[in-house]
Every structure is written in C-alpha cells, then in structure tokens.
Length: 300
Image (tube, rainbow, N blue to C red; front, side, top):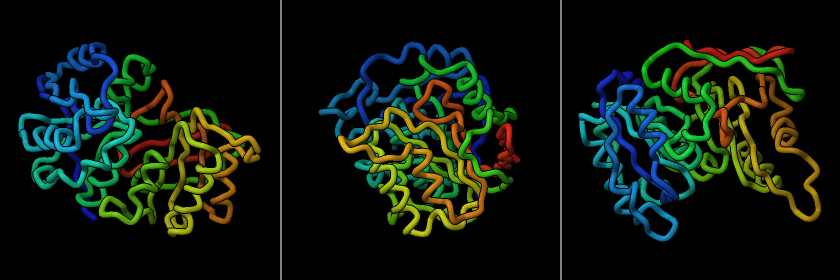
C-alpha cells in the first residue's frame, strides 16, 4: 500500500472543527485560542452548535459538515471536536475521494478511530490520534506540544518508564490502531485494515473488563494479533467490573491473549483517555524499543 502523508501545516493555514459524533457540552474557547496562538485560522462547522438527541445534529448534517471541509481546498486540517459515539452512523454518507488528491490531516481519538481506520484502509492516509478541542483544556503541556509537532512536521518521540507486564524487544512497523471498541466495530467492513507487520496501539474507556477480554479475543480469532510487529497499550481508564469480579486487570487480559506471540508489548503508553494524551501519527513507520527500565519510540 502506498502511504499518503498530508502536507504539514504552516502559520496562516486554515483548519476546521467539526463534530462527527456526540454534541458539544460547551464552547471551545480554550481550544480555539490555542490553535490561534499556533498561527492557525479556525473555521467552525455547523455541527459545533447543532443538537439532535445525543448527537451534534442528525447523521445527514454531520456527514455534510465533514464533507464541506473535505471538499474545501483552503482547509488544511480537520479537527473532530470530540468523540462519544456516532461517526460510524454517518461515515458511509461521506465521499472521501477528494482527500486522495488533496490530502489533509484528520485529528481526533476515541470514536474518531472509525475515521482513522477508514482513511488508512481505503487510501493509506496518515492521520493524527491526539487531543481534541473538547479535551484540550485538560491536556498536559506535553500532549499539546506533541500535537503541534505532529501537525507542523517537527520531530518528536516517546520515552517513559517500563511497566511490569511489558514484553521486551524491538520492532519497526507502520503505526495503526486506536480505540479497541471501535476497531472491533469496523472489523470486516470497508474500514478494516491489514494488521500484519504493523505496530498496533490500543486504548479504551468505560468498558467492562469482560468486554475487554471479549474484544481482544475477537481480534485474535480474526487473525489480527498473530503477525503484529509490536503492541503498544495506552490508557484503559474508568473500567467497570461485574458483581462477580472478572479476576484480571485490563493489562493482564491483554498480555494473556497475546502470550503465545513473540513481538514486544508495552503498557502505560502515554495516549488515550488521559490528560497526557500524546499525539500519535497513524500510518507512519515507528521504531519501538521495549527495554527493561524504559520504553522509547521514534518515527522514521
């Protein structure tokens, strides 16, 4: 597959904010101010103020809002304002073909995993898993700096302490992944992609422990975990358990599911539904080194 990298941003560029999923609970004053401070001009979609049940407008409006910014050549990047749920309801209404000839960055995480997966599967397009306008006010300085560096084409990498359950080793591969629940939800669809030889990143929030086990085993039975180059596990936060405890943590579940494979595995990667949600460039080749004391990862 040919990998497409959108042009990096420059001061003066226009970027858009749209809501492909859940509606916003408040204005994005802090996020707009931050993007302005980076020299970017922010254009807001209709969905930013729209409301339809829990969604930022009905499916047709959310699709049309995203389509508008995909079609507009003056827009160099599109931020999903927030996640929640709903992108899968409107994605098949959107014509992504203009993005093949005039690629632009798509930024978001959580429910936006649907867009990341689809764009990589169909076009080989790089995209950014990172802080969104709703989460920017609570984001760490480091997470916001990695987002800026990813957008403007500056070098950055990751270095953090090793976790107890890590499996040591080195790997090189194209980085893919996102929210576990959403990856399972697009499995078998046009938005699904080839996991073989890739470094897979996973995160999730608010799920039951048994559901984490079920979804990991779903990926395994589909053959998606067997031939990975490496596995990076980010935040698995606000997890729930049943009255009768499941008996394993999320980390224990994951390492158990992949125990027969030999690729490196690291936990506590600084990304996901956490304040230190550092930006990841999906579709870009990453060098991963899981060592006894620490983990490092750098992009080629």
